[in-house]
Length: 370
Image 1 (tube, rainbow, N blue to C red):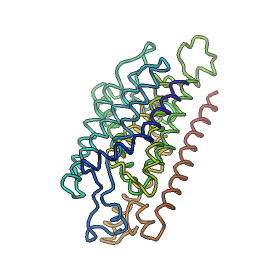
Image 2: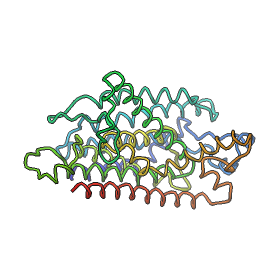
Image 3: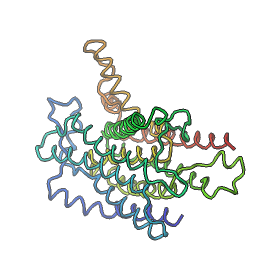
Image 4: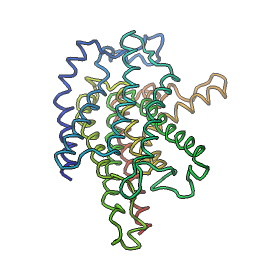
């Protein structure tokens, strides 16, 4: 417990007190937000945000790493392969976002990486994660990830390897790749208003920290003395406490960052931040064996993505008509006259309700097993 609390406290202090230092550097380097011209955008209110320091996601990425390492070693819980895999996804997908942001800042245009180049970059990060996650078993033969589709735990009838090792590996990597790409892009779409993605990320990542900590308390290891009921309800997740530590560190970093990112934001996270959040969530879902539960826990990020998909489908089906005034949904609400702070706070409320619901269903499933 000391490692978990220390990690969260250190990362919180890092982003809360050192963000002004980073902002001075960002201004010196010219890392200012690029906004499209009025002819190219239908929401001119966002032009007041031009020049605000961006790429602030680098701050909470560094803060998370510092908090995770200090917290782990302070409590005699050095990093494990599971925790390092979460860091890999955070840093790797954050790097893809950083390249996208830097291209925009350098050219002073809102066009960075093309959609397909961004996806290729994300896949180049997620595939090595998937390969490593299905190797390096612990003393009980459990690897960080599993070759099963999971909801609250692995679904035994949905094994990729049942189709043979070659096809099984290909399908497994495609599944992991889909989760990583979909999650990072969903968070990226939600990052359109001050504090929306960061505040929602606190609830969602916090939920996964609770899930990992519960799995640690209900672990199957050392289990000759487990009763039949306990054995059926335990979790074979490797290194669940380390997952709780790294996710708690990420929550702390987001809380400190939100102090500066809340409306009216003094810094934007940029694609480097939104993709890093998506990377952490995807990794936590895969490594805690709760992949499909991610749709509910991170439902606040599914909503903007769904609105974009519906907008495009409706536009094509009706040959030019629009379902929303603007997509994603939060921009539609802006166009309807909702104040930005109202939209952000209500999305935080939705994020909290969905995250708590996901944890609640997770706990109910455990009760049903006991």
